[in-house]
Figure 1: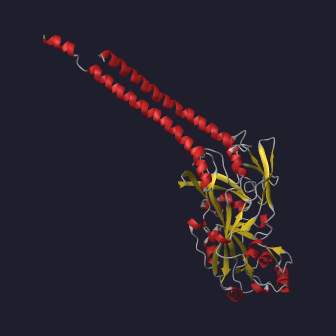
Figure 2 (figure 1 turned 135 degrees about the horizontal axis):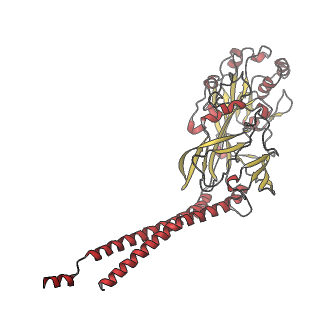
Figure 3 (figure 1 turned 30 degrees about the vertical axis):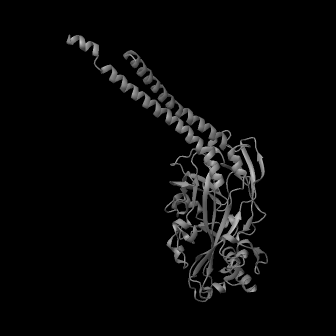
Length: 469
């Protein structure tokens, strides 16, 4: 090979390497645009998309795990005004959300309406006992009339039925209902539940604006709630938590509405975690979500009883009386993030962040929630009364924990493998191809350029011999 041929080859290699590297660089925005368009198309809620198939499916099991509190000293509480000593037992596990969405109707304004049927099936293999296990717990009817009726009338009802402050009930009775002797009607923490529906919901499909996908437009036909005396607190904000818009930003909080807690709430990014080989963003419910108005002024409109909340300074408690029609108070399990007075009212609670906090694991490209744990505690109130005989010895108001629940789900192995194959593997292949072109092009460019420089700077042997002669 002559020197001229070598130079021409090196020049060609240098140019070719540069072109290959540039092609790889050009493919990055093109590939990103292709991925973005594909994800947008697949996350719209319409027939045939991955989002719609996931949204309508009930293949991923959703469970509700209940821990109930058993009172160890009921007689001492009534006769001496002692603090209740509590021992929790659980979980008692039920499978829920196994019935698909019903009445799915697409509307003209890029929304879709539906209802969520409710049902619960006991899972003995995932429970510590049977539904017939007996607990000593607060009498729901007594707590109800204490909070809703005049105390003289309440005392008359209590004495007429020989009701007591505490009662013995099975797990099944406490959760799903029993006929109460004082009220003469069915009563239970979640009664009625089976064969009921939640909704109707109307959510945006994302067809016209992907950033609005799954965002709730209406619940029960209304664009806002009516439980709170403030437009901010009554706002229905965000999705139902099962999915969000694609391409999440870590700095952006996620908003979701839950009919269980009668309000919208937000979660903040905490960290990236691995879920069955899939990188997901973990979002946590921050402490300020249930903070007192002193610490978070946005919560002022959730303070409905200045006396009970010590002039709205109590943290970690949400009064659901206006929403539920009964004096029910919501908190995180074991009063996590709650004020000291909540913890001091009873004995036996041990808040633990890992066991009692709420989190969502969301895949950031699609916005799909792949794992979640919604943990809530249901409480009721009793306190001192001169008119109600069984409360004469009670010394102070007590927010009494009835139970706490962990509603949880995680994608199964088969779905995880499908997700990795259909999305992550294709993205990694495209990314690998782009990077491969850039690396090969740069190597070819650099090696040929170096060779060309060496050849051009090498002394010519013919010219050297002539000089010698």
